[in-house]
Amino acid sequence: MIVSCGTQGREPTMTILGLFYWKAGTSHEKILECLGKRFSFEEPEGANMLFEYSPSGVGDRTPAVVAGYEMTDFAPMMEIELVWGEYFDITMLPAVSAEDGIKMGTDVIQHIAAMA
Image (tube, rainbow, N blue to C red; front, side, top):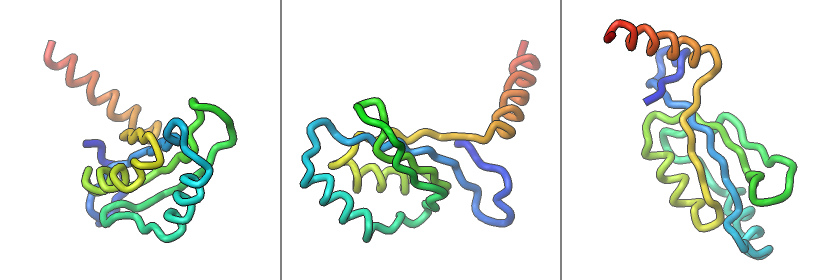
């Protein structure tokens, strides 16, 4: 589990990046249905949405939505995938800041060196 720094008294969280791609052949009607559902959707307990963007671009390689979350465990990620899976092919990726990544990388290299 990747735990973000700076939880400041809160439960530790994982930072997750969600990439949402329209399913192949999604109709205009299904897109409108999805947008209507989005207006009333509330994030599951344990998930805090940090941002949500709709990137500019066309084609299968451009996600329709890019979202960042803080999550306390994997249950909210599973709920998001189940709720939105009928509209999107979804990729959820654990993520760390560059600063945290450098620290983790240094710690891993030191651990590997100590094992040698």
